[in-house]
Image (cartoon, rainbow, N blue to C red; front, side):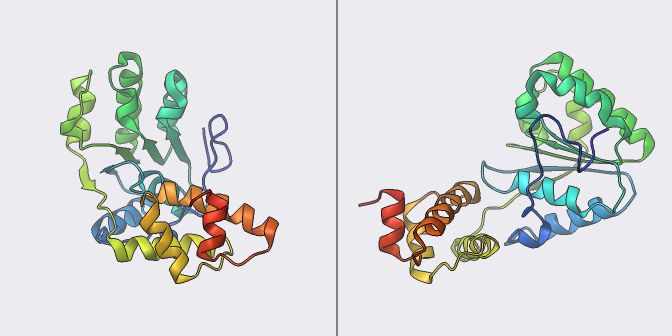
Length: 232
């Protein structure tokens, strides 16, 4: 059984990925449902969908982190696991909380869909919780196995809404603060103007800036950030 300390392959939960470090924006209802599902021992099936970089993985990691101490928690990044998903799904039914990331990546592979159906049934019978994410709602995906598609279709389905400009700015400043970076307003706005605004891309940018700033011991002015990123 996978716990917070025993994750498949090289996968690790992100230390910063908690509900407190997710800028809610217009996702108030989603956050309330996730908090409830993570912390309460009652049967729940949630399906979250949204674009790449919308925070799906962050929210799954946050749900795992919010589970009560000692809970049996399994986080399965199905895209990363690929064909080995079958093996990990085989051990998943003992979980009290099963978090499934990138479900769309395994559709069209009959053996994995069958393993997912079996895990779903067993967790459902035990009154466990399942939180799944994908790029679309269950009804919009091409399931090979209709039975598992219909079961997830009956889940509580929520779209993760993208942040507006104010939310993006808040999220960027929060990520910088977590890294111990002092990010001036003009630098934050420069990054939002010049680069993709999804949090995954901006997080990678901050990682790069963090390393360079530690080495150079310089303030994160716009000229310095331009120099780091090779911008004219």
